[in-house]
Picture 1 (cartoon, rainbow, N blue to C red):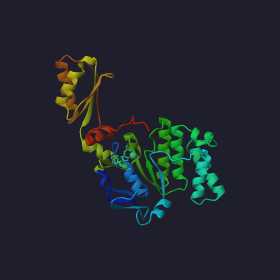
Picture 2 (cartoon, rainbow, N blue to C red):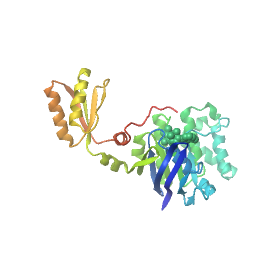
Picture 3 (spheres, rainbow, N blue to C red):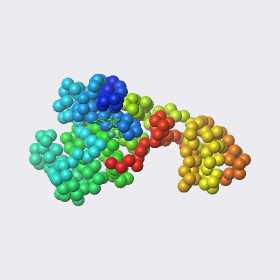
Length: 317
Ligand SMILES: Nc1ncnc2c1ncn2[C@@H]1O[C@H](COP(=O)(O)OP(=O)(O)OP(=O)(O)O)[C@@H](O)[C@H]1O
Ligand SMILES: [Mg+2]
């Protein structure tokens, strides 16, 4: 059973091709991660799948309903938490969730019970009766996420669900997503945090400039890069330029260096051999190495090698 299917989605804004033929499929009960740098087309994809935006061409089906022909049915089946929290500032946390429940047709007692349950699940009980405008950014984000779950949707779409959350809020959100999946919910999430995709997603799609540039499980993507990451810490910051030079020769990519931690790293093929070669050359130049390690590539490495730049985690919204 496929819960979400999109074929050849195209969306242009003037001369910008926000989406340039995106295909995706999510089997029922699975989590798909949509990764990509700023402006890649993640939110555009989310908006089309949640009926908020019409594509120029292409087709999509969510929970068995066509997003263009039958948007009402799609809306009834899904929960959406957008990139920017959509909560009513003047209502309390409780009222926000209660109202969503009533809008979905729940009776008053059921809507109240569901609101209380979700407030507890997102650690908002103490703030339940305060207007949302007094909430911190992270609390608002959690309230918005709770709002997406009120009607117990079979498909949940989350656009950067943990951006702006502190580590505790992020871990709580991951737990909620894992519980949803355990209950059989299908999840599409976009994220800038590759560790999040690694932890939660059954499969991952990387998009850039509106095109899918890679897809697979986290492991498949890591294996696609091949090799390992060689990391060295040199004793003196003065030795960093020479170390970068050695790793450029030994490695299979461009080394990165941090003068503060004195760490220099690079992707290498044939790990241990490259490590020994690097140490031999550094020793030959009288450079003292304090620490050395070989790691499997991370999703960050995958992302960097695919898009040529890292995700921008510092981007505050
Ligand atoms: N309403 C709009 N009008 C004009 N251009 C738009 C509009 N919405 C999106 N775009 C453009 O479409 C492209 C894709 O935008 P989109 O919001 O889907 O990216 P994103 O992957 O969600 O980025 P981010 O990580 O910053 O949220 C960008 O070039 C963006 O500037
Ligand atoms: Mg976005």
